[in-house]
Image (cartoon, rainbow over all chains, first blue to last red; front, side):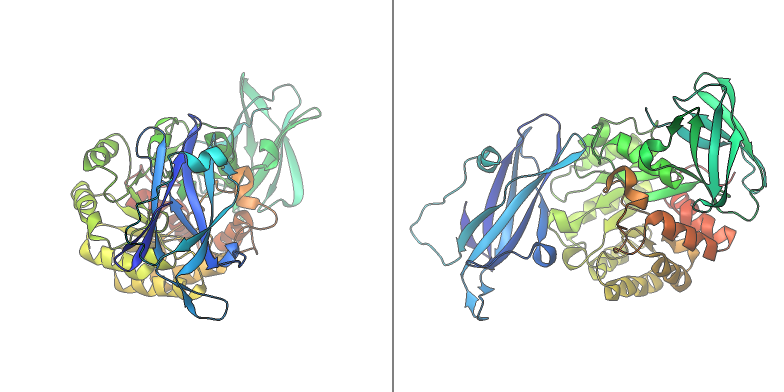
Length: 125
Length: 344
Protein backbone atom coordinates (compact mmCIF):
# COMPACT_ATOMS: atom_id res chain seq x y z
CA UNK A 1 0.00 0.00 0.00
CA UNK A 2 1.14 3.53 -0.65
CA UNK A 3 -0.26 6.52 1.19
CA UNK A 4 0.69 10.01 0.12
CA UNK A 5 -0.47 13.44 1.07
CA UNK A 6 -1.81 15.09 -2.06
CA UNK A 7 -4.03 18.16 -2.44
CA UNK A 8 -6.10 17.59 0.68
CA UNK A 9 -6.53 13.89 0.22
CA UNK A 10 -4.50 10.78 0.64
CA UNK A 11 -3.74 8.39 -2.12
CA UNK A 12 -3.94 4.68 -1.60
CA UNK A 13 -3.01 2.52 -4.54
CA UNK A 14 -4.56 -0.90 -4.97
CA UNK A 15 -3.55 -3.51 -7.50
CA UNK A 16 -5.29 -6.55 -8.88
CA UNK A 17 -3.92 -9.16 -11.22
CA UNK A 18 -6.47 -10.91 -13.45
CA UNK A 19 -5.93 -14.57 -12.71
CA UNK A 20 -8.01 -15.87 -15.66
CA UNK A 21 -8.73 -14.92 -19.24
CA UNK A 22 -12.50 -14.63 -18.77
CA UNK A 23 -12.43 -11.89 -16.14
CA UNK A 24 -14.81 -9.23 -17.44
CA UNK A 25 -14.46 -6.52 -14.79
CA UNK A 26 -13.06 -5.91 -11.33
CA UNK A 27 -14.30 -3.36 -8.82
CA UNK A 28 -13.06 -2.51 -5.36
CA UNK A 29 -15.59 -1.87 -2.61
CA UNK A 30 -14.35 -0.05 0.47
CA UNK A 31 -15.43 1.55 3.73
CA UNK A 32 -13.47 3.76 6.11
CA UNK A 33 -13.96 3.47 9.85
CA UNK A 34 -12.27 4.49 13.04
CA UNK A 35 -9.66 1.95 14.06
CA UNK A 36 -11.28 -1.16 15.52
CA UNK A 37 -14.78 -0.20 14.35
CA UNK A 38 -16.80 -2.57 12.18
CA UNK A 39 -17.57 -1.39 8.64
CA UNK A 40 -21.13 -0.45 7.72
CA UNK A 41 -21.24 -1.87 4.22
CA UNK A 42 -24.90 -1.01 3.64
CA UNK A 43 -24.60 2.72 4.24
CA UNK A 44 -20.97 3.71 3.86
CA UNK A 45 -19.61 1.65 0.99
CA UNK A 46 -17.86 3.24 -1.96
CA UNK A 47 -17.27 1.35 -5.19
CA UNK A 48 -14.62 2.06 -7.79
CA UNK A 49 -13.86 0.26 -11.03
CA UNK A 50 -10.31 -1.00 -11.39
CA UNK A 51 -9.13 -0.25 -14.91
CA UNK A 52 -6.60 -2.39 -16.70
CA UNK A 53 -3.10 -1.03 -17.08
CA UNK A 54 -2.16 -3.79 -19.46
CA UNK A 55 -3.65 -7.12 -20.50
CA UNK A 56 -4.07 -8.41 -16.96
CA UNK A 57 -2.90 -5.87 -14.38
CA UNK A 58 -5.38 -3.49 -12.82
CA UNK A 59 -4.73 -0.49 -10.59
CA UNK A 60 -6.88 2.03 -8.80
CA UNK A 61 -5.79 5.05 -6.82
CA UNK A 62 -8.21 5.63 -3.96
CA UNK A 63 -8.38 9.24 -2.80
CA UNK A 64 -9.05 9.06 0.89
CA UNK A 65 -9.71 11.88 3.36
CA UNK A 66 -6.98 13.38 5.55
CA UNK A 67 -8.95 12.41 8.61
CA UNK A 68 -12.20 10.85 9.70
CA UNK A 69 -14.11 11.16 12.95
CA UNK A 70 -13.34 8.59 15.61
CA UNK A 71 -15.95 7.07 17.90
CA UNK A 72 -15.87 10.21 20.09
CA UNK A 73 -16.35 12.45 17.08
CA UNK A 74 -12.77 13.73 17.12
CA UNK A 75 -10.90 13.97 13.84
CA UNK A 76 -8.29 11.29 13.51
CA UNK A 77 -5.58 10.85 10.93
CA UNK A 78 -5.41 7.16 11.80
CA UNK A 79 -8.27 5.08 10.55
CA UNK A 80 -9.10 1.75 9.04
CA UNK A 81 -9.64 0.93 5.37
CA UNK A 82 -11.81 -2.13 4.79
CA UNK A 83 -12.07 -3.41 1.25
CA UNK A 84 -12.76 -6.34 -1.00
CA UNK A 85 -12.77 -6.99 -4.70
CA UNK A 86 -15.77 -7.89 -6.86
CA UNK A 87 -14.71 -9.93 -9.84
CA UNK A 88 -17.02 -10.46 -12.83
CA UNK A 89 -15.96 -13.67 -14.49
CA UNK A 90 -17.88 -15.67 -17.07
CA UNK A 91 -21.02 -13.71 -16.36
CA UNK A 92 -20.90 -14.41 -12.62
CA UNK A 93 -19.83 -12.23 -9.76
CA UNK A 94 -17.23 -13.47 -7.30
CA UNK A 95 -15.94 -11.73 -4.23
CA UNK A 96 -12.52 -11.77 -2.66
CA UNK A 97 -11.98 -12.10 1.04
CA UNK A 98 -12.29 -8.96 3.13
CA UNK A 99 -9.15 -7.00 3.88
CA UNK A 100 -8.67 -4.40 6.59
CA UNK A 101 -5.66 -2.21 7.12
CA UNK A 102 -4.74 0.85 9.07
CA UNK A 103 -4.23 4.12 7.24
CA UNK A 104 -2.06 6.87 8.72
CA UNK A 105 -2.32 10.08 6.79
CA UNK A 106 0.27 12.17 8.62
CA UNK A 107 3.22 13.08 6.42
CA UNK A 108 5.99 10.52 6.67
CA UNK A 109 9.03 12.53 5.63
CA UNK A 110 12.07 10.58 4.68
CA UNK A 111 10.17 7.36 4.21
CA UNK A 112 10.16 5.66 0.89
CA UNK A 113 6.97 4.78 -0.91
CA UNK A 114 5.61 1.41 0.06
CA UNK A 115 3.72 0.06 -2.93
CA UNK A 116 2.05 -3.32 -3.05
CA UNK A 117 3.53 -5.79 -5.43
CA UNK A 118 1.26 -6.27 -8.43
CA UNK A 119 -1.17 -9.08 -7.90
CA UNK A 120 -0.76 -8.99 -4.14
CA UNK A 121 -4.46 -8.99 -3.32
CA UNK A 122 -5.34 -11.43 -6.04
CA UNK A 123 -2.81 -13.86 -4.71
CA UNK A 124 -4.25 -13.52 -1.24
CA UNK A 125 -7.80 -13.78 -2.55
CA UNK B 1 -33.82 -27.53 -22.09
CA UNK B 2 -32.68 -24.37 -23.79
CA UNK B 3 -35.12 -21.49 -23.35
CA UNK B 4 -37.04 -20.74 -26.50
CA UNK B 5 -38.28 -17.50 -27.92
CA UNK B 6 -41.84 -16.22 -28.10
CA UNK B 7 -42.85 -13.37 -30.38
CA UNK B 8 -45.79 -11.90 -32.22
CA UNK B 9 -45.89 -12.53 -35.93
CA UNK B 10 -46.38 -9.58 -38.23
CA UNK B 11 -47.89 -6.21 -37.42
CA UNK B 12 -51.36 -5.45 -36.27
CA UNK B 13 -50.49 -4.39 -32.76
CA UNK B 14 -53.93 -2.90 -32.29
CA UNK B 15 -55.96 -5.86 -33.52
CA UNK B 16 -57.79 -8.18 -31.13
CA UNK B 17 -56.42 -11.31 -32.74
CA UNK B 18 -52.78 -12.11 -33.55
CA UNK B 19 -50.49 -14.98 -34.42
CA UNK B 20 -47.84 -15.91 -31.90
CA UNK B 21 -44.64 -17.80 -32.76
CA UNK B 22 -42.64 -20.16 -30.56
CA UNK B 23 -39.08 -20.99 -31.53
CA UNK B 24 -37.66 -23.58 -29.19
CA UNK B 25 -36.80 -27.16 -28.36
CA UNK B 26 -40.27 -28.47 -27.61
CA UNK B 27 -42.13 -30.07 -30.49
CA UNK B 28 -44.77 -32.71 -31.02
CA UNK B 29 -48.44 -33.27 -31.72
CA UNK B 30 -49.50 -32.11 -28.27
CA UNK B 31 -47.60 -28.82 -28.37
CA UNK B 32 -49.72 -26.14 -26.69
CA UNK B 33 -49.55 -22.63 -25.36
CA UNK B 34 -50.62 -22.16 -21.75
CA UNK B 35 -51.36 -18.51 -21.15
CA UNK B 36 -53.04 -15.81 -19.17
CA UNK B 37 -53.41 -12.07 -19.53
CA UNK B 38 -52.06 -9.17 -17.50
CA UNK B 39 -49.92 -11.08 -15.02
CA UNK B 40 -51.55 -14.53 -15.23
CA UNK B 41 -54.99 -13.26 -14.37
CA UNK B 42 -57.73 -15.89 -14.48
CA UNK B 43 -59.00 -17.52 -16.59
CA UNK B 44 -55.82 -19.31 -17.62
CA UNK B 45 -56.22 -20.69 -21.14
CA UNK B 46 -54.59 -23.16 -23.50
CA UNK B 47 -54.44 -23.26 -27.25
CA UNK B 48 -52.94 -25.89 -29.51
CA UNK B 49 -49.81 -24.85 -31.39
CA UNK B 50 -49.30 -25.76 -35.01
CA UNK B 51 -45.81 -26.79 -36.07
CA UNK B 52 -44.76 -24.90 -39.19
CA UNK B 53 -41.28 -26.39 -39.44
CA UNK B 54 -38.88 -28.01 -36.97
CA UNK B 55 -38.27 -25.51 -34.18
CA UNK B 56 -41.11 -23.19 -35.15
CA UNK B 57 -44.71 -23.43 -34.00
CA UNK B 58 -47.52 -20.90 -34.09
CA UNK B 59 -50.82 -20.26 -32.38
CA UNK B 60 -53.58 -17.78 -32.98
CA UNK B 61 -54.57 -15.80 -29.93
CA UNK B 62 -57.83 -13.95 -29.87
CA UNK B 63 -59.70 -11.73 -27.44
CA UNK B 64 -56.66 -9.52 -26.95
CA UNK B 65 -58.78 -6.41 -26.69
CA UNK B 66 -58.83 -4.92 -23.24
CA UNK B 67 -55.59 -6.58 -22.18
CA UNK B 68 -52.07 -5.19 -22.02
CA UNK B 69 -49.84 -8.26 -21.71
CA UNK B 70 -49.86 -11.99 -22.34
CA UNK B 71 -47.91 -14.28 -20.00
CA UNK B 72 -47.27 -17.81 -21.16
CA UNK B 73 -45.36 -21.07 -21.17
CA UNK B 74 -45.25 -23.82 -23.78
CA UNK B 75 -46.14 -27.42 -23.03
CA UNK B 76 -45.88 -30.72 -24.87
CA UNK B 77 -47.13 -33.80 -23.07
CA UNK B 78 -45.56 -33.62 -19.63
CA UNK B 79 -42.75 -31.33 -20.70
CA UNK B 80 -42.75 -27.60 -20.27
CA UNK B 81 -40.68 -24.74 -21.62
CA UNK B 82 -41.18 -22.04 -19.04
CA UNK B 83 -38.09 -20.01 -19.94
CA UNK B 84 -36.01 -21.53 -17.19
CA UNK B 85 -38.72 -20.94 -14.62
CA UNK B 86 -39.33 -17.25 -15.32
CA UNK B 87 -42.07 -17.67 -17.98
CA UNK B 88 -42.55 -15.61 -21.12
CA UNK B 89 -44.34 -12.31 -21.61
CA UNK B 90 -45.49 -10.40 -24.65
CA UNK B 91 -46.87 -6.89 -24.49
CA UNK B 92 -50.04 -6.24 -26.43
CA UNK B 93 -49.95 -3.07 -28.45
CA UNK B 94 -46.21 -2.36 -28.41
CA UNK B 95 -42.82 -4.03 -28.36
CA UNK B 96 -40.96 -2.96 -25.25
CA UNK B 97 -37.38 -1.75 -25.45
CA UNK B 98 -35.27 -1.51 -22.30
CA UNK B 99 -33.04 1.57 -22.40
CA UNK B 100 -30.70 0.34 -19.68
CA UNK B 101 -29.23 -3.15 -19.88
CA UNK B 102 -25.90 -4.74 -19.07
CA UNK B 103 -24.17 -7.80 -20.44
CA UNK B 104 -20.68 -8.83 -19.43
CA UNK B 105 -20.00 -11.26 -22.26
CA UNK B 106 -20.82 -14.75 -23.39
CA UNK B 107 -20.53 -16.38 -19.98
CA UNK B 108 -23.28 -18.48 -18.42
CA UNK B 109 -23.57 -16.44 -15.22
CA UNK B 110 -26.18 -13.89 -14.21
CA UNK B 111 -24.55 -11.13 -16.23
CA UNK B 112 -23.97 -13.22 -19.35
CA UNK B 113 -25.91 -13.02 -22.59
CA UNK B 114 -27.98 -16.16 -21.97
CA UNK B 115 -29.18 -14.85 -18.64
CA UNK B 116 -30.06 -11.48 -20.12
CA UNK B 117 -31.99 -13.13 -22.96
CA UNK B 118 -34.07 -15.14 -20.51
CA UNK B 119 -34.74 -12.07 -18.41
CA UNK B 120 -35.79 -10.03 -21.44
CA UNK B 121 -38.13 -12.80 -22.64
CA UNK B 122 -39.72 -12.95 -19.20
CA UNK B 123 -40.65 -9.28 -19.42
CA UNK B 124 -41.57 -8.95 -23.07
CA UNK B 125 -38.48 -6.92 -23.85
CA UNK B 126 -37.70 -7.33 -27.54
CA UNK B 127 -34.56 -5.18 -27.66
CA UNK B 128 -32.41 -2.99 -25.50
CA UNK B 129 -29.56 -0.56 -25.07
CA UNK B 130 -26.65 -2.23 -23.36
CA UNK B 131 -23.28 -1.30 -21.91
CA UNK B 132 -20.50 -2.87 -19.93
CA UNK B 133 -17.77 -1.32 -17.87
CA UNK B 134 -15.14 -2.85 -20.16
CA UNK B 135 -16.11 -2.17 -23.75
CA UNK B 136 -14.21 -5.21 -24.96
CA UNK B 137 -16.76 -7.50 -23.30
CA UNK B 138 -19.39 -6.49 -25.83
CA UNK B 139 -17.05 -7.44 -28.65
CA UNK B 140 -17.43 -11.07 -27.58
CA UNK B 141 -21.24 -11.07 -27.86
CA UNK B 142 -23.44 -11.35 -30.94
CA UNK B 143 -25.33 -8.16 -30.15
CA UNK B 144 -27.40 -8.21 -33.31
CA UNK B 145 -28.73 -11.70 -32.58
CA UNK B 146 -29.52 -10.59 -29.04
CA UNK B 147 -31.26 -7.43 -30.28
CA UNK B 148 -28.92 -5.25 -28.26
CA UNK B 149 -27.62 -1.81 -29.15
CA UNK B 150 -24.32 -1.03 -27.42
CA UNK B 151 -23.11 2.14 -25.76
CA UNK B 152 -19.45 3.11 -25.53
CA UNK B 153 -18.34 3.22 -21.91
CA UNK B 154 -16.28 6.37 -21.41
CA UNK B 155 -13.54 6.63 -18.82
CA UNK B 156 -12.17 10.19 -19.10
CA UNK B 157 -8.52 10.09 -19.94
CA UNK B 158 -8.63 6.33 -20.33
CA UNK B 159 -10.86 5.88 -23.36
CA UNK B 160 -9.30 7.14 -26.56
CA UNK B 161 -11.25 9.28 -28.98
CA UNK B 162 -10.14 6.91 -31.73
CA UNK B 163 -11.80 4.00 -29.91
CA UNK B 164 -15.00 5.98 -29.44
CA UNK B 165 -15.09 6.90 -33.12
CA UNK B 166 -14.45 3.30 -34.12
CA UNK B 167 -17.18 1.94 -31.87
CA UNK B 168 -19.72 4.54 -32.96
CA UNK B 169 -18.93 3.73 -36.58
CA UNK B 170 -19.41 0.03 -35.84
CA UNK B 171 -22.87 0.21 -34.36
CA UNK B 172 -22.66 1.82 -30.93
CA UNK B 173 -25.62 4.15 -30.43
CA UNK B 174 -24.33 6.51 -27.74
CA UNK B 175 -22.01 6.98 -24.78
CA UNK B 176 -22.23 5.66 -21.24
CA UNK B 177 -20.85 7.59 -18.27
CA UNK B 178 -20.57 6.21 -14.75
CA UNK B 179 -19.01 8.96 -12.65
CA UNK B 180 -19.38 6.98 -9.41
CA UNK B 181 -17.40 3.86 -10.17
CA UNK B 182 -14.98 5.70 -12.43
CA UNK B 183 -14.36 8.42 -9.88
CA UNK B 184 -14.95 11.75 -11.64
CA UNK B 185 -17.64 14.44 -11.45
CA UNK B 186 -20.26 14.23 -14.18
CA UNK B 187 -19.39 17.75 -15.35
CA UNK B 188 -15.68 16.98 -15.55
CA UNK B 189 -14.14 19.10 -18.35
CA UNK B 190 -12.22 16.02 -19.48
CA UNK B 191 -15.53 14.82 -20.92
CA UNK B 192 -15.65 17.68 -23.40
CA UNK B 193 -13.70 15.98 -26.15
CA UNK B 194 -16.14 13.06 -26.07
CA UNK B 195 -19.11 15.38 -25.89
CA UNK B 196 -17.81 17.39 -28.85
CA UNK B 197 -17.64 14.16 -30.81
CA UNK B 198 -21.18 12.99 -30.04
CA UNK B 199 -22.50 16.48 -30.71
CA UNK B 200 -21.11 16.11 -34.24
CA UNK B 201 -22.33 12.53 -34.64
CA UNK B 202 -25.74 13.27 -33.14
CA UNK B 203 -26.14 10.54 -30.55
CA UNK B 204 -27.11 10.69 -26.88
CA UNK B 205 -25.18 10.25 -23.65
CA UNK B 206 -26.47 8.07 -20.82
CA UNK B 207 -25.14 8.93 -17.38
CA UNK B 208 -25.52 7.05 -14.11
CA UNK B 209 -27.15 9.39 -11.59
CA UNK B 210 -26.75 9.00 -7.85
CA UNK B 211 -25.46 10.88 -4.81
CA UNK B 212 -21.97 12.34 -5.09
CA UNK B 213 -20.06 12.68 -8.36
CA UNK B 214 -23.08 11.48 -10.36
CA UNK B 215 -25.50 13.93 -8.74
CA UNK B 216 -28.07 15.45 -11.12
CA UNK B 217 -26.60 18.89 -10.34
CA UNK B 218 -23.37 17.80 -12.02
CA UNK B 219 -25.19 16.12 -14.91
CA UNK B 220 -27.26 19.21 -15.56
CA UNK B 221 -24.12 21.30 -15.89
CA UNK B 222 -22.83 18.85 -18.49
CA UNK B 223 -26.15 19.06 -20.35
CA UNK B 224 -26.02 22.85 -20.25
CA UNK B 225 -22.65 22.81 -21.97
CA UNK B 226 -24.03 20.62 -24.77
CA UNK B 227 -27.66 21.68 -25.23
CA UNK B 228 -28.05 19.85 -28.55
CA UNK B 229 -27.04 16.48 -27.10
CA UNK B 230 -29.67 14.39 -25.28
CA UNK B 231 -28.35 13.47 -21.83
CA UNK B 232 -30.19 10.62 -20.12
CA UNK B 233 -30.14 10.35 -16.34
CA UNK B 234 -29.93 6.62 -15.76
CA UNK B 235 -31.97 5.67 -12.67
CA UNK B 236 -33.29 9.23 -12.30
CA UNK B 237 -31.06 9.29 -9.23
CA UNK B 238 -30.26 6.06 -7.47
CA UNK B 239 -30.99 7.35 -4.00
CA UNK B 240 -33.59 9.06 -1.82
CA UNK B 241 -36.70 10.65 -3.31
CA UNK B 242 -35.31 14.15 -2.79
CA UNK B 243 -32.75 13.48 -5.51
CA UNK B 244 -35.35 12.03 -7.86
CA UNK B 245 -37.48 15.14 -7.56
CA UNK B 246 -34.42 17.34 -8.01
CA UNK B 247 -33.63 15.42 -11.19
CA UNK B 248 -37.18 16.08 -12.34
CA UNK B 249 -36.77 19.80 -11.66
CA UNK B 250 -33.58 19.84 -13.71
CA UNK B 251 -35.36 18.07 -16.56
CA UNK B 252 -38.13 20.63 -16.47
CA UNK B 253 -35.63 23.46 -16.85
CA UNK B 254 -33.09 21.80 -19.17
CA UNK B 255 -34.79 20.43 -22.29
CA UNK B 256 -32.02 18.04 -23.35
CA UNK B 257 -32.24 16.07 -20.09
CA UNK B 258 -34.16 12.79 -20.18
CA UNK B 259 -35.12 10.52 -17.30
CA UNK B 260 -34.66 6.75 -17.29
CA UNK B 261 -36.64 4.71 -14.79
CA UNK B 262 -34.57 1.78 -13.53
CA UNK B 263 -35.14 1.02 -9.84
CA UNK B 264 -38.03 3.52 -9.68
CA UNK B 265 -41.37 2.22 -8.40
CA UNK B 266 -44.20 2.62 -10.86
CA UNK B 267 -45.90 5.44 -8.98
CA UNK B 268 -42.65 7.41 -9.18
CA UNK B 269 -42.43 6.71 -12.93
CA UNK B 270 -45.98 7.99 -13.25
CA UNK B 271 -45.02 11.09 -11.30
CA UNK B 272 -42.07 11.70 -13.63
CA UNK B 273 -44.31 11.29 -16.68
CA UNK B 274 -46.87 13.68 -15.27
CA UNK B 275 -44.12 16.11 -14.31
CA UNK B 276 -42.03 16.44 -17.44
CA UNK B 277 -44.16 14.78 -20.10
CA UNK B 278 -44.16 11.36 -21.72
CA UNK B 279 -41.64 12.31 -24.41
CA UNK B 280 -38.83 12.67 -21.87
CA UNK B 281 -39.17 9.38 -19.97
CA UNK B 282 -37.45 6.13 -20.96
CA UNK B 283 -38.19 2.77 -19.41
CA UNK B 284 -35.06 0.99 -18.23
CA UNK B 285 -34.31 -1.76 -15.74
CA UNK B 286 -30.55 -2.33 -15.27
CA UNK B 287 -31.11 -5.98 -16.30
CA UNK B 288 -29.80 -8.48 -15.84
CA UNK B 289 -27.92 -7.43 -12.75
CA UNK B 290 -30.19 -9.80 -10.83
CA UNK B 291 -29.97 -12.62 -13.33
CA UNK B 292 -32.72 -14.33 -15.35
CA UNK B 293 -35.36 -13.39 -12.76
CA UNK B 294 -34.36 -9.72 -12.85
CA UNK B 295 -37.83 -8.51 -13.81
CA UNK B 296 -39.77 -10.52 -11.28
CA UNK B 297 -37.36 -11.54 -8.60
CA UNK B 298 -38.67 -12.43 -5.15
CA UNK B 299 -38.23 -10.76 -2.76
CA UNK B 300 -38.99 -7.77 -4.97
CA UNK B 301 -35.93 -5.90 -6.11
CA UNK B 302 -37.41 -2.47 -6.92
CA UNK B 303 -36.89 -0.64 -3.66
CA UNK B 304 -37.83 -3.88 -1.92
CA UNK B 305 -41.52 -3.37 -2.71
CA UNK B 306 -42.34 -4.39 -6.25
CA UNK B 307 -41.06 -6.39 -9.16
CA UNK B 308 -40.50 -4.79 -12.53
CA UNK B 309 -43.11 -7.05 -14.12
CA UNK B 310 -45.79 -6.13 -11.58
CA UNK B 311 -44.87 -2.45 -11.60
CA UNK B 312 -44.93 -2.28 -15.38
CA UNK B 313 -48.40 -3.82 -15.52
CA UNK B 314 -49.67 -1.19 -13.12
CA UNK B 315 -47.89 1.59 -14.96
CA UNK B 316 -49.06 0.60 -18.43
CA UNK B 317 -52.63 0.13 -17.17
CA UNK B 318 -52.53 3.68 -15.84
CA UNK B 319 -51.39 5.19 -19.14
CA UNK B 320 -53.13 5.76 -22.44
CA UNK B 321 -51.83 3.61 -25.29
CA UNK B 322 -49.78 6.36 -26.93
CA UNK B 323 -48.05 7.35 -23.69
CA UNK B 324 -47.26 3.73 -22.88
CA UNK B 325 -45.71 3.26 -26.30
CA UNK B 326 -43.49 6.27 -25.86
CA UNK B 327 -42.24 5.37 -22.41
CA UNK B 328 -41.86 1.64 -23.09
CA UNK B 329 -39.75 2.01 -26.18
CA UNK B 330 -40.52 4.67 -28.73
CA UNK B 331 -38.66 7.44 -26.90
CA UNK B 332 -35.54 5.30 -26.73
CA UNK B 333 -35.92 4.36 -30.39
CA UNK B 334 -36.14 8.04 -31.28
CA UNK B 335 -33.27 9.22 -29.10
CA UNK B 336 -30.88 6.44 -30.02
CA UNK B 337 -31.84 6.61 -33.70
CA UNK B 338 -33.05 3.02 -33.78
CA UNK B 339 -35.41 1.69 -36.40
CA UNK B 340 -39.03 2.65 -36.45
CA UNK B 341 -41.49 2.57 -33.62
CA UNK B 342 -42.77 -0.23 -31.44
CA UNK B 343 -46.08 -0.98 -33.05
CA UNK B 344 -45.58 -1.03 -36.81
